[in-house]
Length: 495
Length: 141
Image 1 (tube, rainbow over the protein chains, first blue to last red):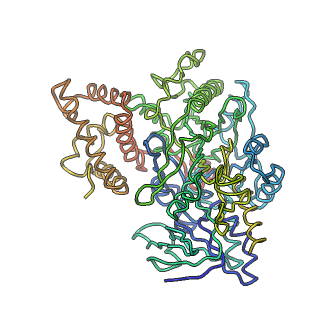
Image 2 (cartoon, rainbow over the protein chains, first blue to last red):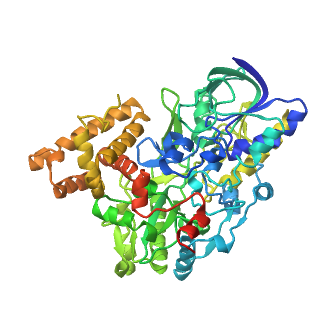
Image 3 (tube, one colour):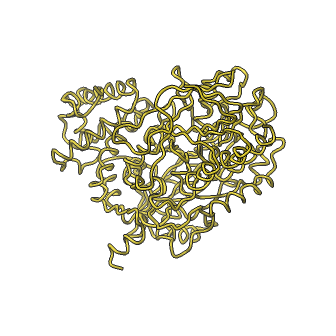
């Protein structure tokens, strides 16, 4: 089946959803705009908060996408709203020094700030009311300040948060203001079509897209696709790729663009993360309340960021080092656990990149660099200090043995060392997937210009985190929206 | 047919031996719960490419026979302490391939055990979509 559109947007997350909203006024002027989303559109009642069920429904490979060497899990969503369905809504603006360091001609920090403010307002970004903050977060503040760290509160994009703690499984109360709640419904109201379960396999040089629409599996979650299952051919005047760092890069590889874009897939970064756990003598509120309200930003000085977090039984279990009785003992202490998420600030390197295999599936090559390992070690030590300062009787970290009692709190430096941070012995995961279609000057240093135009193929644009030339060092979604806003502005000017 | 599935006679004993070492509480599971665990592992393997399934099958076979060299018995026939020692060695093996294999199997066991709502409840996990309202009602606040 063949269809015609003026603009095709691939992906509906922070980038695609934003572009859809910003291009929606073109529909009134007779332009046809469609969003093709690989994942399903779930009804409100389908967000149950049940761990495996929701992970299977919302995440690519159920949340188990692995890097090529199998040592790190990459978590990203595949659903109407993309990863904005499954993040915690933390909304920070890009640091000035980071944008300066990217050195992209035509990209100014002040411009990103202005656009970020627009989306912060649209998505109701604000610090959560103190009455809704749980013990897990309060303990981070207390421990962090006692240990000498500057603790800051996250602005979050929630409206009517009931404190389910289930943000990463999709908010069951529709409180989180992702693109699935704000930008996409607005775009659809204005006449933009959104087609779910529609995977773009390839963009051809004649501006046609090969699209595969999959049928809803029996018993699965989500509505059937808006188009009939099968192969479709879509003719496009202009294509905006916003399928996320991995999806967009893989699509451009499958479209044979790598010959003209030697930097395609290069410069992948991801904030490798560890979950660190402290056990308190008393029960605390941890699995109720918004999970992520505070953070400590040591990115510039020490290469890490610490954030409050609370995960579900399986994710917690797999994130702990070891197995057997000691592992079970920590799991049985679940109601007394305080959790901290450690994000290491990695740098774009030559080795870390995205490619595709023979079948066109994305392959992420990632190796921990010595600087990143140092960031993980420093961050783990800092987290342990905070957990002990908050009153934890023992902490669980990558060490041998992994449990450190409060009596040993003075020996953190000796107990937590780089030799325990070997790939394949750590439960590393990452959810901030960045780079691969970096903005820059020319094909020799980048894939697009500062407005997301692909070098040499200006009818293809990129509007997602793959545009980042290097790590953002903070939670990226507001910056993705700001960049997507720029891409949409350029598209409006060009069509 | 899912290679390495714990629902097959060939792989069930080794999966159970590993599962009860990784999560000692698994030894208390009844037939229905084991069936649930096996279904979760089988489902997770089925979602992976055939090549990955074959790699898991190969690793499990290796894992089962490796202790023969040192203890004269397969892993499935070892006592708990010896099994734990073997798995600890694999967890710290110099070869990334071996460490990766161990982590993969460990992850599948944890997925199947803690992914069951009954196991989540047993460790005191109480998250509820209704959040604070549900907690306050449950605690009688």
